[in-house]
Every structure is written in C-alpha cells, then in structure tokens.
Image (cartoon, rainbow, N blue to C red; front, side):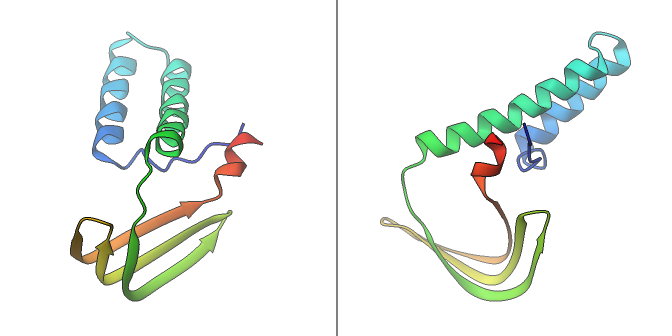
Length: 106
C-alpha cells in the first residue's frame, strides 16, 4: 500500500513523531513499530477526512507557486480567501498539498 506523509507536518503529526522518537531512543518501542504507527496515522487521517468532513470551501487567491511531483500537487497562494456557507476568512499565505486518494488503495 502506498502512503503519503501529508499529516505528519501538522501539529498532531509532529507531536506523535517526537513521542515515537523518544520511545525508540528509550528502547520502549522498536523503529519498525514506530514506522507502522506513522503509516497508520496517515491512513486514519485520510479515512477520517473522507468520511467525516462534509462541508465545502471555495478558495480564491494569487497563485504564487505550483508544482506537480510524484502525483502530488503543491500550491502556494498569497492573499487567499476561504469561504464556506457560514463564514469567510482571509489568509496572507497558504500552502495546499493535494493528491489522488485512490493512490492510497493501490
């Protein structure tokens, strides 16, 4: 199964990685098991977003940079506006990483 490391740079992903690193250094956890935990974390986050998030958001902004590498799109927007049914938020700079979720099941 392929996996993307999309959520590991989020706050919860970084805290999980730090905790697993400490456990490996202390000998509490094997490196192989720590890797399995991280892979499961990415898979669980993907499944949760697919099944539990129902709202839609429109994004407008100035496209500063875009790139496509290994079936992953990366967009950097400046002066972006996020709008859903209830609210609108402005963000000075945002990085969006997008991939085809079908690739995770191959």
